[in-house]
Structure formats: structure tokens, C-alpha cells
Length: 80
Picture 1 (cartoon, rainbow, N blue to C red):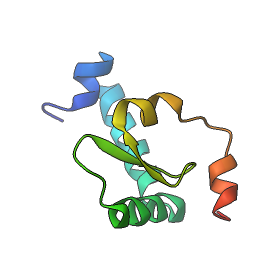
Picture 2: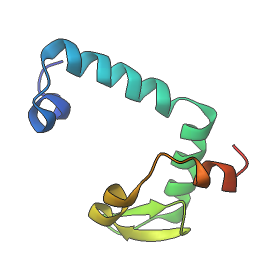
Picture 3: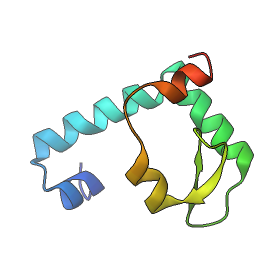
């Protein structure tokens, strides 16, 4: 995994970066992950913004990534 962003940003070992990449890919390929990707692409957010599924609108990337919780409330909101 040459040049993986995880190793650079999170200072992960090669093995840890590979495991993380696999976990992230598996999470992205779940029904919930695919749903989030579809809805985010439909929103067509401007450059530098992400679609916030909790608010239902585009917000700056930094704010969206800083506020995401793992409570599952947004997932329940969409019946996933």
C-alpha cells in the first residue's frame, strides 16, 4: 500500500494501514455505506463540502468529520 493516506496522517505501520484499508472498504460496501454514498452524490455538494446525513445538507468537510458520532442515530433515521 504505497502512499496510503492513513499511514501518513495517522502514522500507522504498513500492516495496520492495510488492515484499516480493508475495514474501511468493507464498511463502505455495506448497504448503509452504499446508501450514504448514493445520497451524498445526489446532493452534489460544492468543493470542500460533505453531505451531512444528520442535517440533510452540505456542510464544510472539517465540520462534518469532526462532529460525526457513532451513536447510530442517523442510521436509525434512515431505517438502516
